Image (cartoon, rainbow, N blue to C red):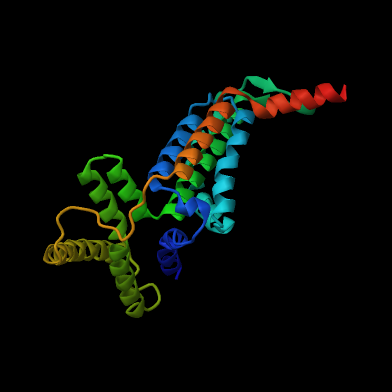
Length: 269
């Protein structure tokens, strides 16, 4: 069943966060801040900028390599949500027909350039967000957000949403198994049955939420995120943040690919 495989694959990124590498040991606050600045720099490029985005691939590649994160784990999730980016930019080639480039005599319109720019920005931002979870864990991100003085209510809601999404999916999985066990042929797969399942799932979710909340109160929950290990800022964390942001700023101000291309072509002449 595809639903089961996707269900057990949801928390895979969190399991990767238990590895012991340089990027895993960094303070989560530094990793969140650097990743947020990285995303801001990437999305700040104009729609026709394409070559200037290429050097920014170094950051996700660095996290992927140093963090020993499987490439397939990130690539599959990017491909899963890529239709959204394709849908956003798929009409650009039809609306923007001005020719910007003509490499080897082949005209390339601004619509195609902006479409490719959207895809590159999408890959950079989504891969960075996924890698941030893979090297930090979602609870670690929530702890860092709380220590960065974000509203505690927002952070708790975000943490509970992620944590009990698995509980909700577990209930849905058991309901689907029960339906499959009682279905013969196409029986039990009508839209009427599906609507009834959604209604039952909603009722069970409310009841489960009440039981979980009462269990949390009985165990002394007072609205605080408690973790076994709290990170502290070190000199290596600050150096990583400073060097990374400085590189992002350099890549934003200097078109490295275009500069290297002009330098090489001038040298060959």
